[in-house]
Image (tube, rainbow, N blue to C red):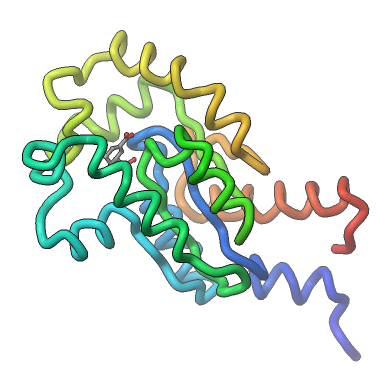
Length: 191
Ligand code: S3P
């Protein structure tokens, strides 16, 4: 007997590209790896790809070329991606701040906003030295205010939002798939 389409879809995972957006430490890289392992999606880790292309680290790019040059590299990378590839793209935390980036993501996939409380973020980024925007500012007040500034842009860009606090990567993947299914049904599409 043939499996219902909805069951096949659940096993196969997302059909198109997925863009994971959200604040630094929201879990984008970890969740991208889990989605790739579960559903055979190809990963693009934006920070890693930009480092590879530039031949230097993100911290080095910020220090020597400046933030604006880094933002331009993000836009260049995003605007060369194509629809329908089954990519999972782990975006840098600032990607959704530029409208041109949001339009590029919309054109070729679904946008998933991973959220986390400032306390969760602080715990996750505490030991990291690779985030120039948080160097010297690893405290709740700073994270809260930067998050509050960015929140409206994340919210406006997102097709779905999934909270990550207290969940492991497998649970977050389940929640993403469930939220996407709910959205499809809400849009009158199948499965
Ligand atoms: C940034 C987030 C970082 C990285 C860069 C700027 C931001 O990526 O792109 O340091 O503006 O939020 P992660 O979100 O993967 O840490």
